[in-house]
Image (cartoon, rainbow, N blue to C red; front, side, top):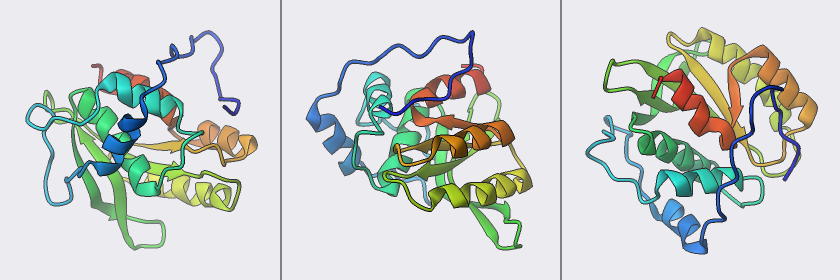
Length: 185
C-alpha cells in the first residue's frame, strides 16, 4: 500500500479483515440505480455490509476497479452509513459554464443536509494529477458542500498533498470516517 496522508494526533482507521473474493464480485454486479431519483438508505439494502465496504476501501490501491466501480463503492459506503444518494446529477456549472455533474450526491434524511462527491480513481501513474486543479476549481463553484474522494494508488504523493491542502478531499479508505464527521452520524 502506498504512503497515506495522515494528520498527526489522529489515529489511523483500524485495519479491516481482508474481504473474501466474492465481495468484489458483489460490488461489480450491483446496480446502484440513483440516476433518476433518490435511493433511500432505509429502503434499499446494499449487497455489502459497511465492514465489507471498509475492507474494500482499504484495499482499493491493490484492486483493478473501473471508475464506475469506484463510484459504486462510494455510494455503498454512504448507504451503509444510512445516507440517501443520487448519482450523476447536474448541480450548477463548471468554471467554463458547462453543466456540472457530480458523481454521487448524499443526503441525510434526518435534516436534508447534502454533500456532493467527485470521485477520482487512478490505478497507474498518468495524467490524472493534472486534472486535480480543475476538480478543485469546480468544487468551489458548487452551490453546496463537496468533497473529492480519491483512490487507486496512481496519484503522485505531491499531487495529493496539494489536493488536500487546497480543498476538501479524502482517501477512500478514510471516507467512512469523513462522512461520519461531516453528517454527525
